[in-house]
Amino acid sequence: MIKQRAVEVTQVKEKKATLIFLDHAIVLTKQVYADWHEVQAEYYAHYKANLEPLSYEEIINFLNEEYENEMPFSEKELRQFFESDLQTIYSEF
Image (cartoon, rainbow, N blue to C red):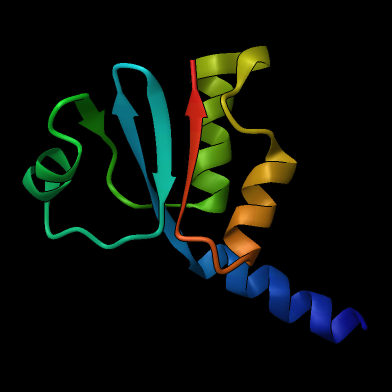
């Protein structure tokens, strides 16, 4: 069991996802984009900005720094997302 959990943690650390900022939501996706122009084209009507692909830990650090107690995704939601086959999650505001 311990070895399996270590493999799962390693796999989560190796995965990356992109944070996309829209005018009404924050999107987190595992979809791979060539550059920000491609992201903007997909979300054009509501696109504001995006970050480069980040690891689970990098996203946690960024969101904690930017949003403190009002993070758009909980650490549990982020871990479940990185461990799952889901490609995209949203947090609307």
